[in-house]
Length: 324
Image 1 (cartoon, rainbow, N blue to C red):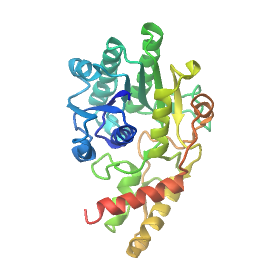
Image 2 (tube, rainbow, N blue to C red; image 1 turned 45 degrees about the horizontal axis):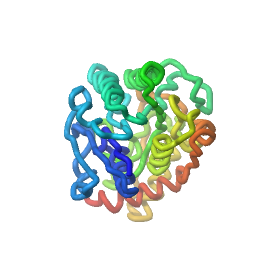
Image 3 (cartoon, rainbow, N blue to C red; image 1 turned 45 degrees about the vertical axis):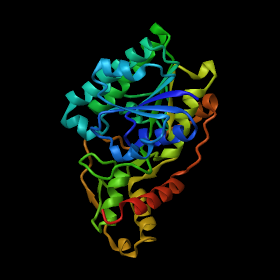
């Protein structure tokens, strides 16, 4: 049994990680301030003797130190996501994503954490036009959010070299799946479109829909976190990995597939029109990951291609969001 701290453990990815590792028999501590996470995501675990919740903010160093006490591993998911949010409020995004990240690194170092696995981002590739995206080739960031996630990688590299803290960054590519919040101003595109279609509202694609993404189902992300946390390959640590499927789908294709899959449960949805709007500031046109490095060093093998993951996600949303 490992003692695992999951920051942002009440969020979409964090709560899925929490559920998985509790089911594996590990002890899980969640640190979350519920600014974007939800208590209902982790309520099923409250009676589990291997689960502990610390309600607090990573911007407070003492809270980070308390959370890291007696832990073996840290899976750092806490962050303020969303490119548009960072454009509207770059200061808060920086405070959480950079200062909070640094607090967690310091606390992990002082608590002699065995390994610090953190959520990096595909936004780090910025204006690089090369496809597929390879870890060593990045461009200039296109948003404050992208800058914060790149700074995380730089800090992790310095802490590994200076203090010997083992760090692995996982550059997430458009993660989707169960428990992803469809509501709020900064909801991700898939859950946002899901709830609009379920309510017979027309979703609006930013641009003409030809932008493409390497949409990555949550189970693939769980696998990458587990492999990064437990690998005993010394060549696999102190680096970053693309966390993706290695395939891309246009936003237009995704939207029409969503409508098709949801129509299985409600045939009225097939009549909902899909609209187009202006391009969104800070968006990367195309995103496609090379996962060769993760395969080589971590033994990563995606279990869900995009369509299979989307069908599972739709099934979960239909079961959990009907009439909401």
